[in-house]
Image (cartoon, rainbow, N blue to C red):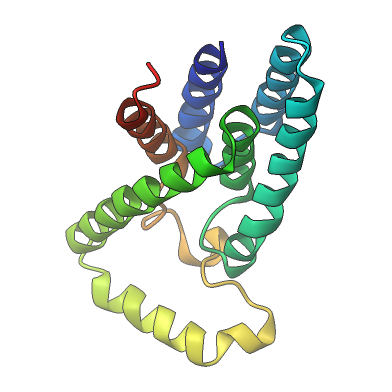
Length: 169
C-alpha cells in the first residue's frame, strides 16, 4: 500500500518540479494524509507516532540544506513523506543514492552549459563571504533556471533503486 501512495506522490511531485521548479504543498499533504490513513487502517498507532516523529526529524535535519539554498523546501517535504512511510533508515539509504545521482546529473549539466568554473567560483565566493550575510548560495531569481536540477525525479529514481536494493517489491 505504501508503494502505491509513493508512486502517486512521486509522479505528481516529479511533474510539478519539472514544470514549475516547485512541489505544491497539496501533493505533500496528500502523501502525509494517505500515510497516516495507512497506519490508522492497520491499527498501528505506535508506528504512526514514530512516523510523525520521522517527519519532524527529516524536516529539521534537512532544513540547513534549504537555508543554504542547495535544495528546495518541497524536496525536503517530499523526503518527509518517504520517512513517514518507510522510516529514517530507508530515507538515509535513499538519500545516499539520491546525492550520487544528483551529483552526476549536476556535473553533466554544468559541463554541457560550460558553467562548471563559473559555479565553482560562485560557491567559493559564497563560502568565503556570503555565509556571514544570511544570503543563499542559489537563488532562482538571481541565478535563473539554467543550473536548476529538479530533485523530485531524482528522488523518485533513488526511491525505486533503494526499494529494489532492499528487495521490497
